[in-house]
Image 1: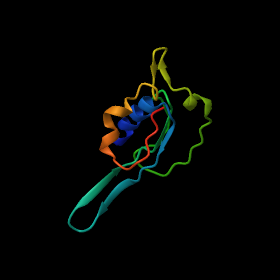
Image 2 (image 1 turned 60 degrees about the vertical axis):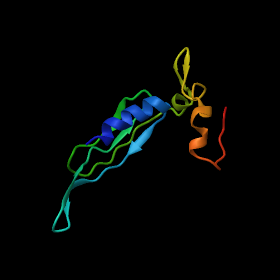
Image 3 (image 1 turned 135 degrees about the horizontal axis):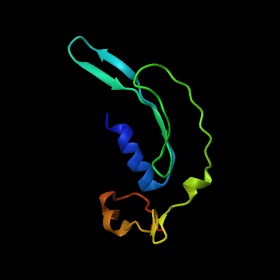
Image 4 (image 1 turned 30 degrees about the horizontal axis):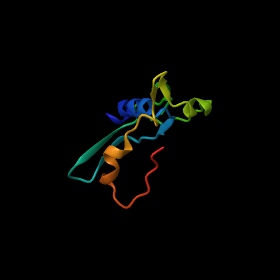
Length: 102
């Protein structure tokens, strides 16, 4: 049940569009039951839900987006999603990988 809300935050943090596809209903292996929450969604770079399915039932939806919105990485006039990242603080967590500091 948390993925739908988490995607709002991820889209805000990274200023991007996201499409989240989720199953609905229950599945059991005879011992354990797993319940799927449905609510597949399309989220915009400002955290707005552009389209969300119901908790049950199939859905097909189309949303028109402007990809330019995801290219604007400014959160405020003084906060830039990528330029404000401090790669030097976490670079050594993944040794041997190529890091782009800019």
